[in-house]
Length: 269
Image (cartoon, rainbow, N blue to C red):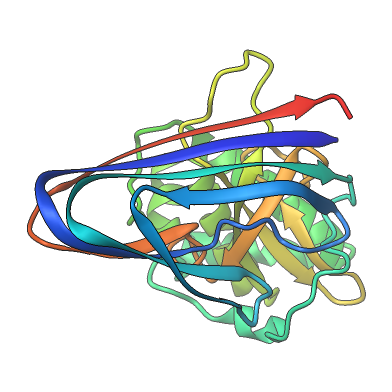
């Protein structure tokens, strides 16, 4: 499937700031399931700094903007040819061992309810079927409802209130999986826009669980499926903050107002 991406992140400050420094994970991952045909990342007034590929295989690019500045736009656009690999991350080069993703973070510490869900893995016929059962359970336990959680909402909080967005589904999934002894990580990326053609409010997120003998496999509780050709994988981390496509700081006291639009659509090959 040939997918086109137009992703705009707009920052506005109520008072000009002295400068902005950002770190971007906005390049599609290199693996057998996707081939980048063209891709660009631009930042209003930005100067591109150093870049590197980290141990998880993600491309990290630094940017700076000299102030005073009261408005910044980060625009991502490009085309990616995708292949359905049933969620398996085949051909992806990384050096971080899977066991490193058994670590908890502040937002993914498992409470009693998440630990109980994690037991679905051991109760299943195989680790793979257990991971699928866990995905279905998380999907059923957390109804998709935008505006009910915040960026700081933990996996336990989202599960307790029974509502959230893809970030909450992904963090609850990886929290419960780790409690069940399965290495798990948060993945940021894109998902093809719906049939209505409306732009998404933000980029998509899902989880990857490590199954011995197979490797990393993606699971998306928000859509009750493994990532297929509709998905573009960007980067990963221990939780949503660790895998954030854009991280940064601004120098100044101006309040930041953020807006994001994402359109991912199919094109004829």
